[in-house]
Length: 161
Image 1 (cartoon, helix red, strand yellow):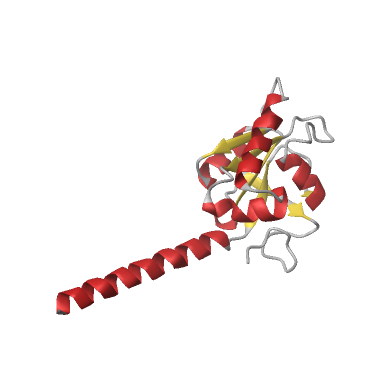
Image 2: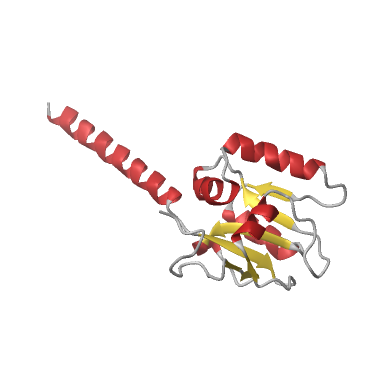
């Protein structure tokens, strides 16, 4: 009897821990990072939507725009789907395919496996921007203002719930 109670309690705790991590993954703040050579220091939310959908091909300085992101189907990207794409994960994936199909010389949107991979790709690709958890930012990138605000400022557009 004792071992069943201990096992049941352990399973309940494991379930609660898993639910807690899922909630945390969905509530994080995203930061828009940029390659250090980019001259852009801020972007409006509508401009960010265009970049994320592959509708912007060049920055004002002429560099090609590439958006580096995690897979929209990843639980950590729920905020991106809701606040930027405004569509389901399947619709976002179709948008990515469509955006890349129309670009012959550089990818509009590059999907990578982790926030660390987003940072590395943005660091190495002039014209690149990406969205990562604020705690993944490194000194090799520039953090851009979105709608006049930096991450963690009140009113920041990419703040998790």
